[in-house]
Amino acid sequence: AFHMQTEAPEAFDVSGETTETLALYGLKPGETEGFGWKCLVARRLSERGVRFIEIIDGSSSHNWDQHGNMAEHADHAKVIDQPIAGLLKDLKRSGMLEDTLVVWTTEFGRTPGVDGDKGRGHHSACFSSWMAGAGIKPGISYGSTDEIGATVAENRVHVHDFHATILHVLGIDHTRLTYRHGGRDYRLTDVHGNVVHDILS
Image 1: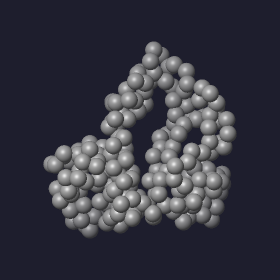
Image 2: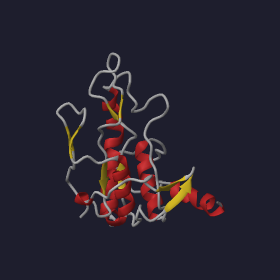
Image 3: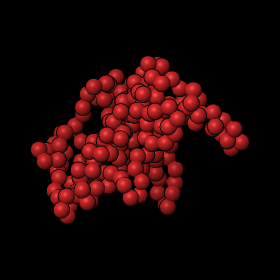
């Protein structure tokens, strides 16, 4: 904990980054908040050996959980689009993307039907996630929904499969660690999950 506290000020200080790098993330000199700043700090933490970094966009009142107005997703997308592209480009030009896995995902999708006036309900059956780097095939899509996004049409990937694939890319066999809890055996993906080899280079 002491080392984390003493190292953190330097890692979080982006004042030494070039104007070109700041612009890559959509930042202005001196800016120390927002999604672009989070992405840049994520790169700086990765450089310093931090092995897991989670970046969250939104807050409890202004977020992606749109039951009221789906059009707000356009505003959210504008906030994250350039910083994420900047992070991927920055990791690639430094050579770090080769062994850094970037995962963009959410906890659920949105229903194809209207929820209320302009919103959408929670939808666990279909939603998109993407991964980049660390041996993931670039520029492909895997799986598809029916024409209205209500159900999976081909190449269904369950959350356990997604998790198993992430662990595989990180060098962890999800079937090896089993632990007893509540009277039954569990593993990192509960008792399920298959690695999706078709998306791996």
